[in-house]
Image 1 (cartoon, rainbow, N blue to C red):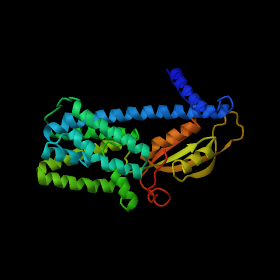
Image 2: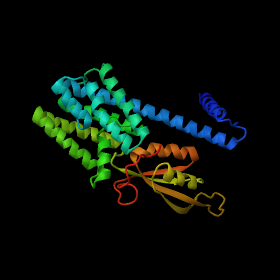
Image 3: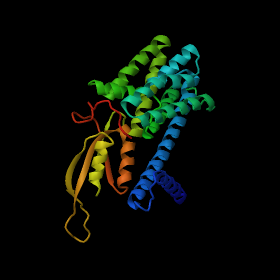
Image 4: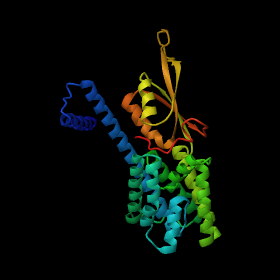
Length: 328
């Protein structure tokens, strides 16, 4: 299967060369690099699609198997959609797609074109799944509905984010506001959801609002478990013989800063002198992790990458980074 996949990639690059009037024999190194880059991009795209599909199925199961049958709500855009659906009887699938579209447009401006397209696809698939897939009602117990409805919804959101997309636009709004103010992403999401829960208490009942808070707590903790928290930054240490190429990619393609420091390889089985090596360190957002891995794999598949959660940052190119499109 791998050989068949590589043959498709090679044929595609060869056709590209023919269109440009070049022959791959004239530039064998360039040809191999383009084949490798395309193979990495396609394999990562397939991985992201799998994450997104799992996320859509999990979120739709949480909605139709738990929350919808008991008229429960959640936070975020999904919570707003559930409230409007209860008041107007407009199909939830239509509301999920419609209410998330402004946030997809915002994602195009604030994050990247690729992320916005993936998110639009994810939201559309979620709307389709909610409308057409007949999930059974799992339980009538209110505590179980709030806990497990939130769990499956959070699992879906987390898996979608790992696939480089969102199926609830709250995160995009929070990222945008955090870049324009001193508020963190977590604070913005919390404030946004407080208004939703207050609205639920006023329109429905205090009991429904309290269960909604429990659902949101379950969902948010599940998202934290899946992706270590969307509001956290990721400190990435990269050890590679091609550190200069990786450095240029981080700066020019990712639009991020990085630090280079000198180190030595510790492995020396024959007691020979330790080999010196440059080490790249950068801090990126969780949403950019998928793109960074793809770019590193294009340069050096054997690169050693260490990822650590960073609770907060100050200065540099992270918090106050201008709202320009991040190339992907």
